[in-house]
Length: 270
Ligand code: KIV
Ligand code: NA
Image 1 (cartoon, rainbow, N blue to C red):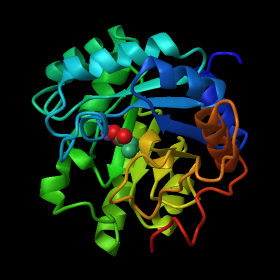
Image 2 (spheres, rainbow, N blue to C red):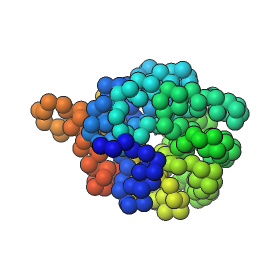
Image 3 (tube, helix red, strand yellow):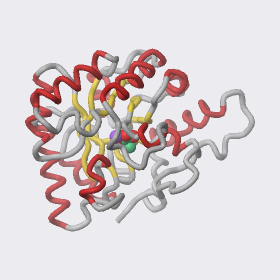
Image 4 (tube, rainbow, N blue to C red):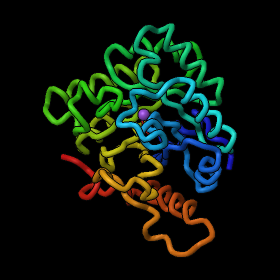
């Protein structure tokens, strides 16, 4: 498979091909996910919860993100590699955001992701102007979990929905090339995707976005308690085979591409 570039991802989006993203934190899984056809690997700060056993993503640091990004970069072949700027690494100033992004790019990331609208717009513009591709992240932004009052669906009332749409447009105008929409009503996610000409990657956002992302360990059934309703376990139905993880991920990619995941009723919110 040819390496995925931003140019190719844009062309796939323009052609109506769905983009399949999964989180990935190490070289072994990077190799498996890449071979299974995942388009985009996200070194998510969810690793704070999934790998480190923490209650939230807030304690994760730039050196920790850089370590996992370097591990994934060594294991991947052609998938596009996005790394999260962790909490506290871009809130202070544009200069701080650039310094943190440089650390992740030098570790092997091809794009950095940061959370929130409003004040992040000039930060996104500054990174993009300096040659650092940016993925935005709106809706439920886990680094703000305490301010948001928990893991709740966002954008449910008309004012919040209008704000989310305005933020998405401002971030795209600032140069964000991709955007994660997390835990928002399916109709709102579809509306944002129609209004903004960059690929939206949904998680708990219904089938109307250009792409989908899940936390790897969730879709492999490794997260025992508190599995969100929008997750589907893709390994449960894989029969005996040499590499069940790769087969599960291959099925995830196929389901995203053919639109059978997520299911509008089973996995979406109103
Ligand atoms: O950290 C993460 O895993 C994420 C995805 C859920 C989008 O940000
Ligand atoms: Na994240």
